[in-house]
Length: 247
Image (cartoon, rainbow, N blue to C red):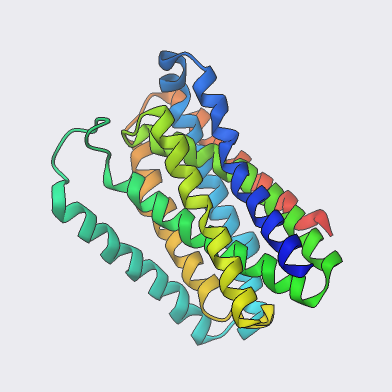
């Protein structure tokens, strides 16, 4: 029964990635005009996820300690090296559907790792109790909606076609299923998950938001667009903060 509840839950969470289908319904020029807003929303959601969710959750496991700082910094350095590997291939070519920019791949990697951990957490809480697993699943769903909308915008802005961006986003979301299967197969308690993987993901998200997404936003210096970007970053942060009040 626990396996059934867990698999259904992580599949539902994975399907949330299709919220980006709303972008397919928009005219291409209209989508292009709002991409910087979606990137801004994603940057805010990522930073809000780091400071309002991931770091507090990790601190409950290992405290506000040097180890926590080491894991977060390790996440930043890990994603720095991953981006270097991606950029070494072809970083000088103009963005197109044939050549997406490295930050789009970085966003996919970060999102895949985050979803993998979400799947682990959902499975771990189901091993404690079914009601706790259901409440955790609902919390993850509400957490994912704004981030998945922003992720879709990031992938399109990075050069992927809209349909390809939607399918890649779904593929990265499916790592939640893999994470859940790992926990169920090994029967690992949820308390052990946050000690390393959560702060590592926090460092990765922090790197993506501040090193990849915000520099992209800085390229547009029009006053109105800059104001709208700030507003959508704050909206992303605000949504993540409001999710901390669910209890």
